[in-house]
Amino acid sequence: MVRLFVTSALLLLTALPAAEAITHIPVYKSTEHLLLHGAVAQRADAAIRLGRRREPGAVGVLITALADASPEVRSLAARSLANVAKRSDISLILGALHKAAPVQKTALVREMGILAMPQTVPVLIPLLQSRSLTVRRQTIRTLGEIGDTSASAALAGQLHSSDARTRLLAAAALATAGTPECAPLLLPLLHDKNRQTAINAAVALAQLHNTAVVPQLEAMLHQPAQPGYGARFYAAYALGKMGDTRAVPVLVSMLKSSRASLRATAAGALGHLHARSAVPVLIPLMHDSSRLVRFVTAQALGAIGDVRALPALQRGLKDANEDVREQSAKALGNIGDRRAVPSLMYAAEYYNDDAIPTAAAIALGRIGAPRAVPLLQRLTRSKDGRIAQAAQFGLQLMNRKTWHK
Image (cartoon, rainbow, N blue to C red; front, side, top):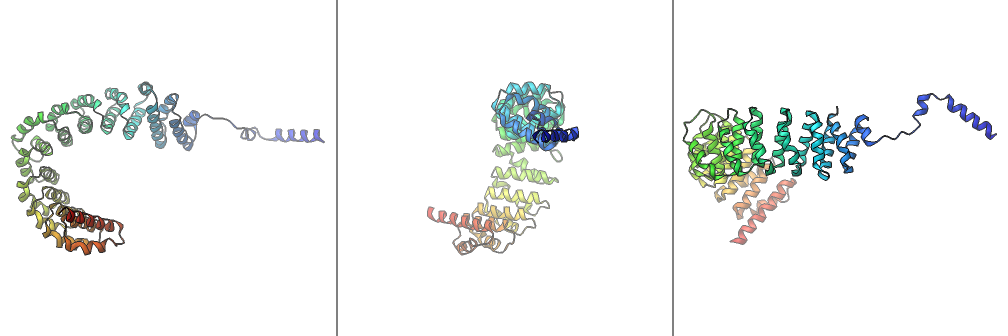
């Protein structure tokens, strides 16, 4: 009977098609194999697992996966490679990158910026000499995102590039990864034909705050006025952000520009300088046709803190734009004059959107108006959590003000 059963079983197995029989035989596939040859979901999972292994041996296959057809797999492979780089010899990554295609290098460099890994800066700097413009540009972006000053000199070298986009990116990167010694190299970019490059250079100069370049910036203030933007304006912006009040006259003249972005930038710089002399010129801008200009002007008037701006900011509470209304409420709180209390109480109680009542409630607390206490107490029971929280904070601010008195 047993012999008959075994014979029958063998006959049954031989009757199965070859392909069907094979599917029942488990085949071990390594994670590396799945990353390169599996389905999309398998490749994505394999990329994640290789990043967790902490094995330098995973570098090669992860580099290969940076050219995967799936964007998800490419992104995961880049992140895993960056994770491996955290725990292993950076030179392994550098060696693998030399053999990688531009698309692979770009993906990895982008991911290093997302993870903000200062230890990868020595790997990234040589990529600034890559033949691929895409790789060079992404490397500059990533070095700026990491913000490590050890890349300062290498980034400064890119300011002389014949590629306008590269100069633009390098100027922006130096704002976060530069050192004060780089400031003189940024000065020529204030004359750059590309407006955004000049803006980035001015922002970087303000960030680096190297007083050694102040005489050159001041000299630019006396250059003939140019229509729209120009080195004169960028120099004024940089000086304004550095706290140099000699920029005020130029910035005030820029408030009359036909360009809204120029008017807004000048207003913001004047606010940063707390330029009280500019208040009479700033007030009319609360009626500007550009909501950006009105918003920045309200912000600037609040920073300056001059009571002459009260009527304009109270009208700003009724502006057509919600952001301008909210910023006007904040500015009135910063000025701290009790004549603004009735307008702020009305805004806190009757405005429908939560942003304005929230800002108004906090502003009332900053001013310290006792007659607003019952209103704020009622608002702490509001169904809108943001308004209730702001009213509670306003009461706390008021109590501190009373206690200090």
